[in-house]
Length: 255
Image 1 (tube, helix red, strand yellow):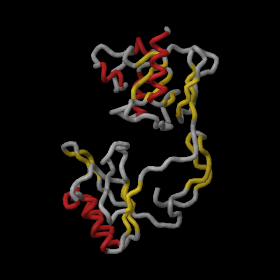
Image 2 (tube, helix red, strand yellow):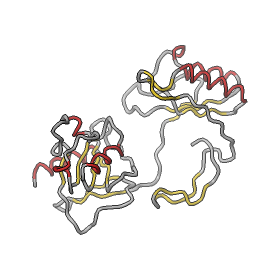
Image 3 (tube, rainbow, N blue to C red):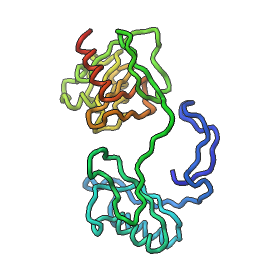
Image 4 (tube, rainbow, N blue to C red):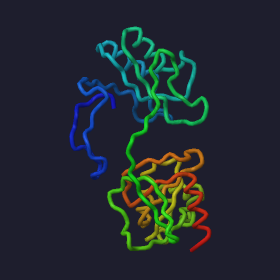
């Protein structure tokens, strides 16, 4: 967040209460819209991006914070590289995002040497949400769900594939795509969904609509140990890939 004054009492459902602020609390903000409704699968066109840089240069901005980018390409075919080049020539500092496609090699966005390209940071807080199994093992995940399940009650734990709807594919059910779960199979149970493709909170919505009481969101191998605390619509926890493998082994060993 580039700017914004000090705001006391900022929180989400009571979590993480404190004072929020932007990187430069005293700065004034001008916003330039470059992304619109998809046209042939694309939302942010180079013409709009370059026009926004031109407008910002004309307005006399000091810094441009650009949370935008795609796969690395030649600079003369990259709207962010072209627009930012002209901005920098006019004395504007341009800060861009490195993207979310790691940790593979060559996945950084915005590589032009006149940019300040910044990777995503972590924070020094955790929002733990524990999954307690029938054998008393506790798996620590992350969640901002406003309500947990009752501690003194047991619920059956099933994989989303077990709850697959008749007209859904196994891949759709594994990812808990909307409408891929059978209400009779999911009702009253904690459902384990795989991360990927659709939004994380959308998976919880699919489980909730199917009558599930809780969600365990397990990382795939590519997302590894990254856990994100989301505000899910039902009691939920997000666990690592290694914990997901251990959980699957437990589920295959017991009813």
